[in-house]
Image (cartoon, rainbow, N blue to C red; front, top):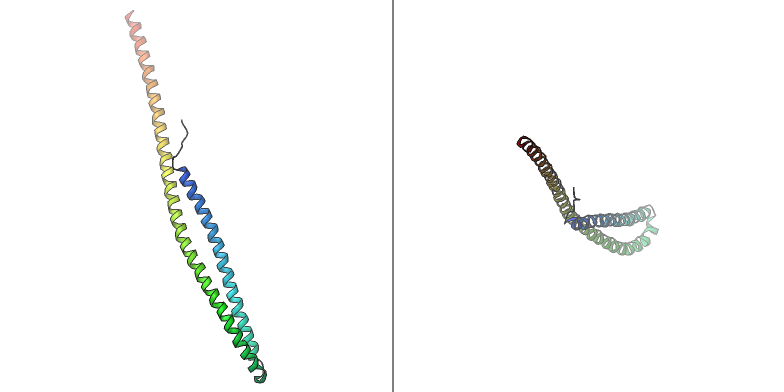
Length: 155
């Protein structure tokens, strides 16, 4: 039986590589999203901590420090806004990549089904060809035996 060779195998190989690369990129994006989340959480916790510290002080000392905190918190809020925008962009990118990954996965699965069907058809054709050879051999043997009998009875 000759070996099965599928003409679309290079296309399937490319799809498998694309899917693998896309998965790695999604993992990287997820790590980046987690890092931005941690950064936002850290900054918010820091602001809450400073506010709690200010709340525990006397009014005389608190007012000047509270004014300084308000100036610095505006800068910190701008940083938080920038981080939130970055987080949104990363999440949007992850959503796009998830859709692209599902399309690639679907294409890969379709190609794998086509390959499996082609392999089964190849196997069926090979079995049919083997059976045809066996049938021809059987016919030759029977014909030879009949001819020998006919020749043997003609003498």
